[in-house]
Length: 540
Image (tube, rainbow, N blue to C red; front, side, top):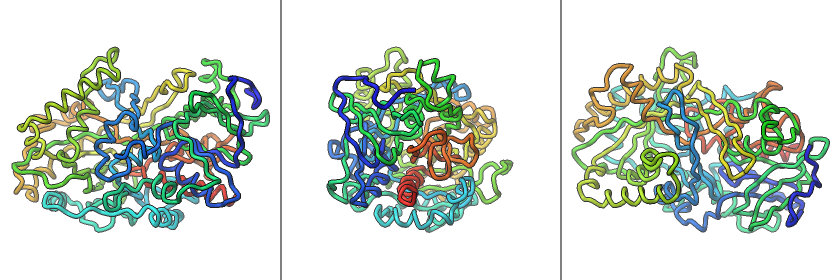
């Protein structure tokens, strides 16, 4: 077992704090800020990416589309080839900046449904977490965007298909509903957890925030107590010790990787890399899942008058599922192409057209430049202004994948396998969902817009043809979860107090702890986990 005082680099400096939080994302910012509210606590927050202020687009509402193609704030990762998704390597990037994905996403703030939290351990059910959500929202101050003619037409069409218009999508009832999402913005500003909990509070002597600080490993005493974090900062390898607890908030794709590099994980896997095993936790890295999505695109005969993904609906698409009857299993996002079509193509197309062996920063930028030039052509821009998508998202995936190391080099991404559609029921749901999405686009509510289906196209009509379309066009919704599952079984890596089993002084407080992802977006649930982690630590 690696000892705390082991010497690995001559430039190591040791400082001690009461708490060390690894990851300044949606959860980590809240954990650190809430713990620092007690002036007797000293807190260190480590974020591997840059400060948000270095990239102003992460602090303004309309900046989300440019943040999406800024490689300094949106990390490049890819899954392994997906067996059930045309063997594609799916882009798996997440926010790598202060505020995490909450600084680069579309700002959707959705709590989830009452049924979602019934799948979580006791103490995390819907009625248990409402006061916590309210406390977060008091600081976050989310808003809904005003209706437009196009969004109202979409609602009218969806109502023809059995969706019920709903004023508030955050009251726990998401059964066959459509409405305007709450979004994390106010005025012209984005309200990420970094802004609401860290930046708004101002500098505090007891909170040390280090950006550009990549954690290499957690270090343990012989008694298996998490005692220090080794990290790289300003070109030097450093250590910080924790007198009380270390809280991992690096996200579902980084937290299990960091644990494995620290000797906590499946012992057989760790030994293949000669990593000394601190504790054998076979389930770490298992249970990885995501919300895959596929678009149904339409062309209208006039400009789409909407510039944010502000309209969402939720529906029970697969009636044969064993989910509760009131549980929606899919989400439909009404996406206006004028909002960010160029940026979406610039982000997603390069890895599709550049062979894997030649893909890198230079080839990526070259393709992006060509795309940017194409979008300056008047005909292309006009086509985009008339285009919209109904994005089908699989909200309750049954498929489960894995995350494993491929190197002991912390800068090398893990092997990411969300195993999309490995459970055949997921594909069945998606095929049904494509039919519903195209029906919404063709309903009379949108007749005034003259919507014509572009993709998959009317020729793609059989179940087999639609499934083939889904396999070839699936992308991520960036909602990775479950790789350090929270549960009541001793085999679950994390208990209901977010403590990592098998060691002491270490908690996991991010989306990796989510046992089964809500049907909704994960930003609000991730903030909930961070807020409750701080409460649990204080009460302990």
